Image 1 (cartoon, rainbow, N blue to C red):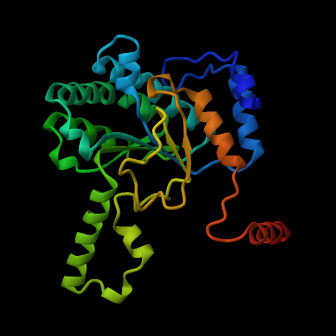
Image 2: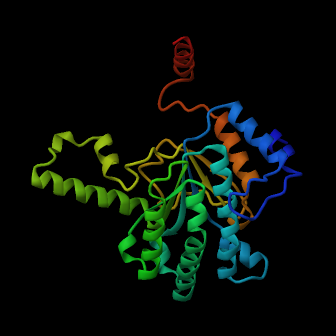
Image 3: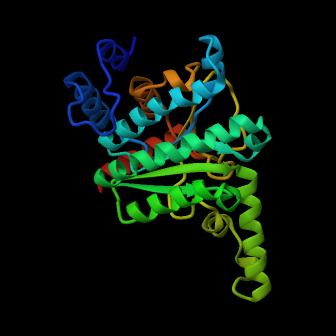
Length: 282
């Protein structure tokens, strides 16, 4: 059993956003993570398993989505406390529009209620809300609620809460390619100038670093058309836990696993070790 798991066995979690009374055990875990190694600057999460969680408990799929809100609250709070700068949550994919109409309607209503209810708390705690995806095809009420909260929180900088909504990685890349093509056509860009950095600068995440840690819940082993370009070198962490059961203790385990990995980016272990030694001498 890891140190994090041992310490979290007795942890209790406050269901409210940004409470200041997180337990001493939780504070010790966070201090341990901060001191052990560098924390990921950007964490992305594929929040999966709401429906299966509901089915396992004899509940409706909608009840599963409602239960998942508590997990969002706890993970956002924990990331804020740890000092994580960017958190991206895969909330609704382009493919999710194929789901039953009543489920989509309930999801959109839930999104409006949660964002509307929590916008002031996000602002008070220096959290900036950002949304990526095909926002224009969302219902009017969803768009207006999101835009109001984004405007309210636009100058906040403790944590960027990035919501991927009506989003897919393929859409993101195609959208970027179209914008690049238009700029080449207008003469603002030359074809020979297009490289990895240029493509990245046209993606919906251009203003933020690529995710270093990508978490997927529910036991599925795929990234489901999520941040395909940006996750090229992400460390991927899979867990069998359904999203409504995912809490900060599981987040800490994912971060601890991230810290144990050697990120080589195509180099050898020996090269990484030499680079680290050279960096320490500077």
